[in-house]
Length: 242
Image (tube, rainbow, N blue to C red; front, side, top):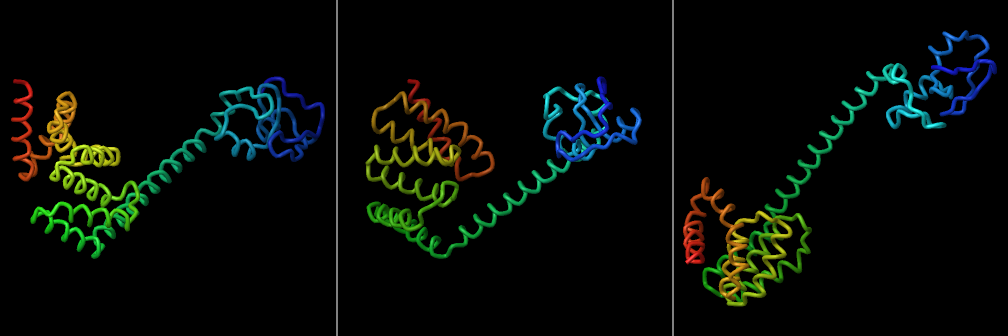
């Protein structure tokens, strides 16, 4: 704490501006009870304890505090960092639980599930125009949030119905919305490729199939449902190379 001037017996703390009475302190006692920067701007120990987590520099002259001054607060700074990380982890856990509760409540929505069952029945009957009408009604009535998993499901079914109706541009439009929400949505790039292939856009076909291949290969390792899609995709990629 070089350049410390104690000639004036009363100074103000540069942080709280409260008085610092130096009259009954010798030089050594001053340095133990009050803390100063290299330019002798004094502050109370407790005031600097609150300041130093935000900055290692003097609030007046912006000179960095000496290492021996900073070291006094090392334990305090370490505890603050530990508390910050603990609070961050708790916040992440709470957010994860909140999102899980939201998803569970959405998946348990009986009205939504009943509508999806009607969609599946209409698809099995190849009544794709009725499928579209019902899906658009669901889409408009629920006003899904971006991360709502039901939104992705509805967009995929709409794109599938458009594909079956040979309305490829409309199908692609919905699939592009879908991958912006969930880039890894199963079969999204597969159907993008099918649409592009029907439209003769071979450069885009390869782009979509290449992304789909990595995804479907991984899914088929644990889910047999995707194996026929993988076989079909591999054959289509092979035909593109001929």
